[in-house]
Image (cartoon, rainbow, N blue to C red; front, side):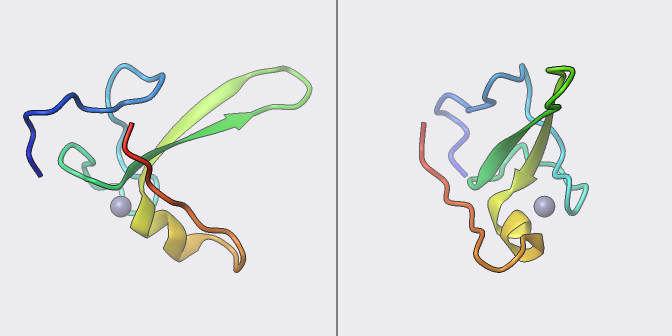
Length: 69
Ligand SMILES: [Zn+2]
């Protein structure tokens, strides 16, 4: 939970709330950013989440790993 290093936010300017637990991800070490794309319109949406929480709601066979950027 250092807080001194650069905080990865992905392509979004600030960290998004966790889409699973709705909690803050400011201090999360397992923060992940999910990109959704609409096939026909090309529209994009981003969701933030704790990787641990995301894994808990994913179907079997899917898993999220955190890679330090
Ligand atoms: Zn969460």
